[in-house]
Image (cartoon, rainbow, N blue to C red; front, top):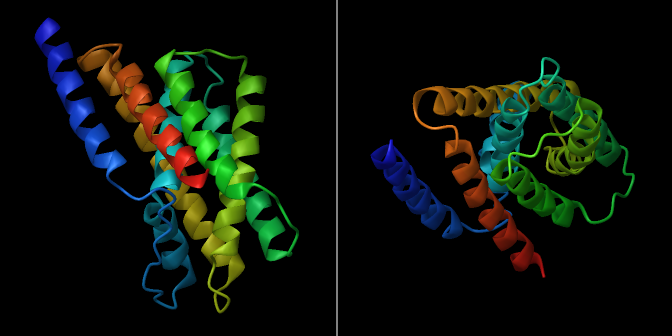
Length: 200
């Protein structure tokens, strides 16, 4: 078991070094295919901050050990749609990039300390973050594409990323060590702090 934990620490350190070397707030453009559903699906994967936050929500939800914990990741895509709609409507939402970076930092801390909250509190927290992420997605949507199809694409991608975090966290706790998700949380926290420092 000690050897497994040591290996986990090596993996986390290597991944952390790789992540820190990536540019913060990496909203790289994809080649728009004129297929709104496909473009929307690919978009969450073009921003490392979005991808990391979505994975973190799945990991943290799996730590809750509550029968209704699935409501936490389920609330994220729903409120993300609301945020996207605000962006498309031209309604200003201040501090979006800072909110996204903060979401990575806070989620990392929650995972690191295996914080368990009432489901309602978890949903409320995640919903605030989702608004910012959705708003950014809405701002970056190509003007020539269908908002409905584009939104459906990034919602589908988001659900899959949440599920990946959830199942990876559960598998790690059962097959390796229960503390592995917490190591991942430390890594996510450091990347979130880096994102925030880049915006300062």
